[in-house]
Amino acid sequence: MIEIELKYNGMVIYMKNNYKIYDFVPGVATVESNVDRIPMFYYAGQLNDNVELDKVTPNIKVKYSVVDNINSVAGLNINEFKNRSSRFTNMYYLNNVIYYERNIGLGLKIKLCFIDDEQKPELIVNKTYHKFVKSNVDTVYATGRRLAHIVHTKLLEKEIATIHAAATSYNNQAILLMAPSNTGKTSTVLNSILRNYKFVSEDICVTDGENIYGCPLNYGFQTIHQSSSPQKININNKLKYKLFDFFPMLAYYLNKPMDLTVDKFKINMEHKDNNLTTFSSTKLGYIFILSSSPDKKYTELNATEAFDKIYTLQRNEFLYLSDYLISTYYFLNSNAHSIKSISQMEESIIQKMISKSHVYEIFSNDPKDYIKVIDEIVKNH
Image (cartoon, rainbow, N blue to C red; front, side):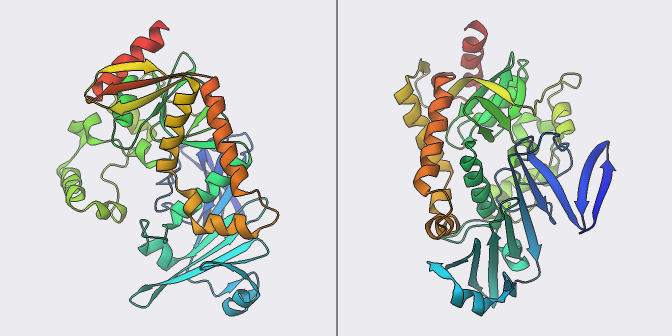
């Protein structure tokens, strides 16, 4: 394998043949891939070179490969591999390798191979799977969602949890914003920046229970909603938003309307001279759970109340426990952690988060109210 070191805009990108390594959780996780967009990979919807590779050795490294076809697995032709394998539903397992195939109609067949290499787990998919399955349908998950589930569980094995939360920071304390989708996390983060908070993450964070790491390549970070800077949106973007309202599934097959980089994000927020973002770890200080409600109030939660709320939000957002790929791996691999231990690790990290922070629930039907309450609590605590 030929390795080339390139410099792009002052940043070093390591290329192996046509592969690049992307630091999608700086200092925590990297992915090596021969494509720059992985459908429904919630850690990094669009892989790009805006984030410099962290000098710290990441906790996990994964590889994602798109190939023309998968004709053999682990040195065996497909039929021979199947005959030697143990099977879990429609997944075949042999010696840390999982193979999956399924007809999706019109003569098309999707194929997947997961190789659980100790140093760098690899997910290999054929072009048909990568190109045509852009969302989850029944038990057929998009390739990026399956890669995300691999990353999710591998991080938990190393005592790091993925959290469905936006995050900002003030006075070097991370502030997690947790809520169901479409409640107001994004607008609250953007409004916090206008009040001199620092941006950490817009939709996904990872944590060891004490430190918060953002995911700067997440879709939400690069695709700022039109309300943040309406004057920057051209007519084509407006038409796309209208089209997505009527046909939501099209959003998975068309490019996102706005593909904003870190620098453009700073310009749009009209704070060009400020250091708005932080990609290093930040100590957790506060957790705010945002609830859509006609009652305008807030309350501090005790540990039990906070755990129940956070755990419910986590289970609603992350479905890795129902992915047959993950189930096959933990069910048939005698050397792997158990599903129970993975779940318990997530619970333990959530409990640690709660013990290290002040947890509040804010109620309002107007997302603009959230930052007002947060600002009052954080700056007067």
